[in-house]
Image (cartoon, rainbow, N blue to C red; front, side, top):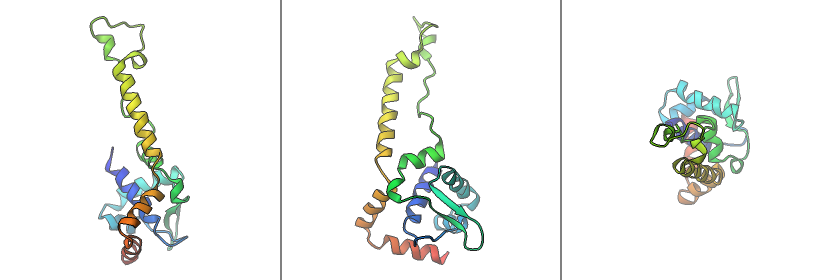
Length: 157
């Protein structure tokens, strides 16, 4: 998984702490993480296309969450940044091995492929079960000052 996924998750988390209706520019979000704005903007645009964020232009423009943090799953973000393809792609190596048959779809029959598909499904279920809102609540339990610190730092940039 690319670093863009991690930056996208942190960005959504931080936008969850902004004042209602406040937009934050890509430049400010990038400065928060000390990242190149052009690179982070690529991730932000992917989140806009996935309807996780909205964007507005102009002097007070920027990005904000498009929906409630409890309605944004980690799977939503991973899919927006990385796409929906499976992590494992069966190359049907069994066709080339001893006893391999050209008429068999080993991506369906191979026990290795089945195990990897099962693991991918479990990983996706786990990501779908965690939301930005849930992480936000966990962070606030651990560090009640995190929202105010985030808002102040974004305002200073």
